[in-house]
Image 1 (cartoon, rainbow, N blue to C red):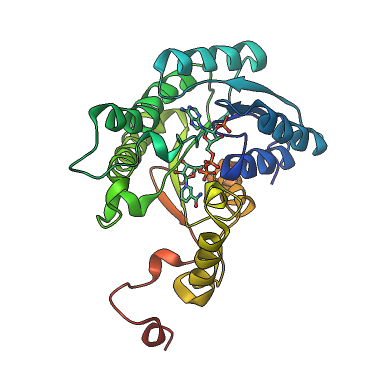
Image 2 (cartoon, protein in one colour; image 1 turned 180 degrees about the horizontal axis):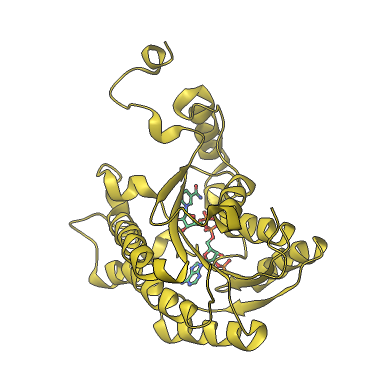
Length: 267
Ligand SMILES: NC(=O)c1ccc[n+]([C@@H]2O[C@H](COP(=O)([O-])OP(=O)(O)OC[C@H]3O[C@@H](n4cnc5c(N)ncnc54)[C@H](OP(=O)(O)O)[C@@H]3O)[C@@H](O)[C@H]2O)c1
């Protein structure tokens, strides 16, 4: 699968899942604009990995909760690449900016989650299609359980924002279908070597053991490379007929029924 000659923008490409996506797209031949917010050193490291694969790219800084920043980011992409074939909306603010329960959350924290996900995607897609030809690819990285469940109380703003993002994906898929541009969401399961690893080691170990015990049927957490592979597949020419879909890239975790003991489900 070759993406040679293609130009991609990956938001949140400085680390975690975004880095996995940027590196995989580069491995497939695409030039990559690596976006970051404050962590320029990490973004440089991603760009070095992109270049190791013989691809090229550049760094672009923006706060995706500020629409003037989102517009400036696309202006920089236009000046550097002239065109864009792949837009991956992956960036997500630190939990401290929005992690509050439904009865406590401030409107500022709510807006930060909504603006950084739904509004940034609305503006980002409209900016990207201005420089995208026929057959472009747009991928939103979501966390679908956050929008469907209700037990992780302080996740209310991000869960609602991701649900809005997933809805926008479907509307844009229809809008952009006549131009052959596909728009899809990818929902990773819990992923190693990401924001998760900023938690205490004991919590990371517990998470790994939980998934190894069967809550992810494939017996492990995902990696940024796993998610990069899925995004690259969706960006390939052969994926032209897939649009408006939510792909669970989670080793089967979303198939497990929480109402039954695992031993019964394993048969
Ligand atoms: N990790 C998981 O297990 C998991 C599971 C399901 C879904 N996801 C989704 O996958 C995506 C990536 O998650 P991750 O865990 O890889 O994230 P991460 O390691 O925390 O990285 C977050 C990225 O977003 C950027 N960012 C933070 N605040 C920003 C802002 N205000 N404006 C623009 N960019 C900002 C960061 O840039 P700097 O480096 O410059 O700070 C960084 O590149 C997110 O959309 C998340 O919801 C993650």
